[in-house]
Image (cartoon, rainbow, N blue to C red; front, side):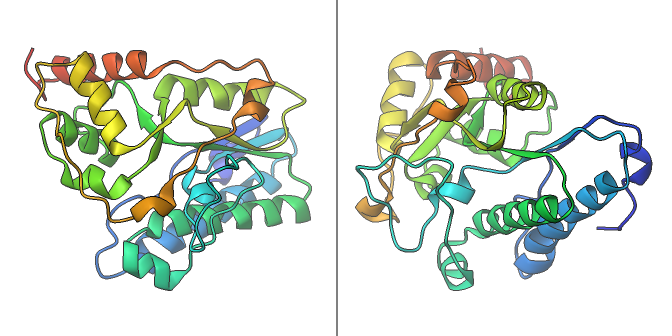
Length: 263
């Protein structure tokens, strides 16, 4: 949040990857804990980039939440692509507690405006729900939600409804690809498969029958949440995604090694 604090780290770099943004901790102050850090933090990184004459390209991690969450619903027969933007507002966020979607949308829009005004070569990556091995044993909110699901808890995933999933290695490879490929430009959706909760549960129960996978989920969103992703823009760069089997196999192996679930 401190302007200039990235100057020393960025000066002399030819590329900058800005990946961090607050996800949780909105209790009582979503603007101060999520919205302001996402927007102002991103702009502070870009202000430091502007001062660096060696810079060639900036890659910012946005989110598929900046595409899929919509106040007015989604046309189910038209897959969402990079031209789609989230259009939730503060009232919607207060009702459904989706401050993260608003923060990623506003931060990405601010980044595009700043990059255009200051002639910065910017590319954004929009991953869906990340699955895979976790380096730290202190799990992120995403990994914690997966662990809860594998332990038989359904409450957190009920709020996700229909969700895109992507392997964490694919997200890393995507960032590298769009930085190194000179033809890369604009936004890139990064998602392997989109599933409803019950489809995910059915897949997990069949593949991992020793785990207490929930059989039922509440549905706070109704039928209006159905959507698919069109990731052809990324695939046209030669990108190939891992499947659900590999991403969850790696995830569960990591959770076992760390002692979060028994062998």
